[in-house]
Length: 163
Image: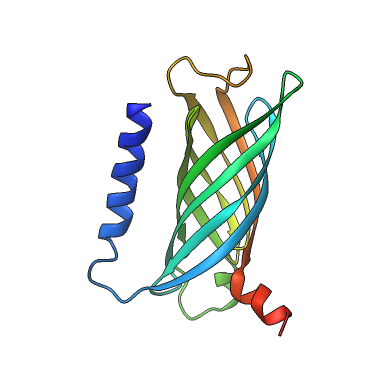
């Protein structure tokens, strides 16, 4: 557990230190998704998108993974940190997709990941999870290939729908 806390603290300090000199716009999003980690989990949470320009975007998120492991319902907290990259200049269409590099961690595993995202709203990522200690969930080991499919809904969009 100490290694997970240390890794999350280092990632947080790294991402927050990049914003020390620049004026950054922050956007809030609700995230809904699916995660496969030796077991299927639904995901519900929130993310903060930090934006100075649209070439490099940073995101921090917290969510809950919910699913059934060995016929027992289980919930795990999840923290994530992503960097979205697209260096195409003066071409709006090419800024519709970004390459995504990031990491996610729960109290059971840590998983670096890579993938693509469409407008920062629809993510498809994959990675490999490394267990934290000998912990599993309801006797199920959470090691190996990690696949995520996530929909990030900006809260501004939700607010504007109900005006």
